Length: 325
Image: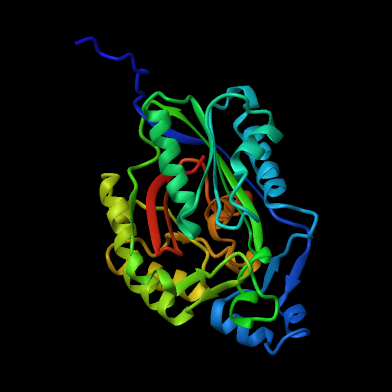
């Protein structure tokens, strides 16, 4: 039997470009307290957020994704002609058709390869990154643009203090390319569908609903093992991890997971992302944006070993080890 032709595989993959975008409109805790029953102290104590960004009505999710994607290409020193695929991780498009990725690809000028969305909510970026890495590693594409983008304010009741204080808008992007060595590790992922009702949007006329305490208990007990498994799959030790970038869901969740990792061998000087303080919870955008902000602030350096872990609605989760570009 004659074998089919397949593309030659590559040795490994890496992140070659990184960028993010946030709307200009900064909304403080005091701004929220002026229109609902809450306070700066209450919000800081519950979730650790001080400020967040809300997009204007005329700034769409696709606008933010395209801006972040263009910046990531510039950071990688590439053009649209170098990209053979666009993946957008999102759960907040205003409608399911058309998808975000095809529109983003057109805006940026990417003419070759697939353009599709991934919806794993707050774990979406890690899902998309793993998919892009496998596409490049298999030889299907040379470079893939991965974007996490959310306009959560389209789906949040502005009068519901349980969600309105948490969620925000943003986009973060990376470019994945080939590497002689594996600089994006295997993914540790899965789901807990028995808890799917803890974070929902009932229908197209509803807002996001979250059972905060249930999600908090799940995240603080179940996500550290996912992160540890990602480290094991990468063939390294927890003590090798320089930077920990979890989904920016809640500062108390972030600190609880980091504490569990340190109890299992992570270093005391492991840098932990706390971008939520100034950016809020931006779902699939939070991990790449936090990484971009930390690099820009000089908190991390190129070549650092970074542990990523996303978790959220579904309930879905995923983690992998990467090297900082």
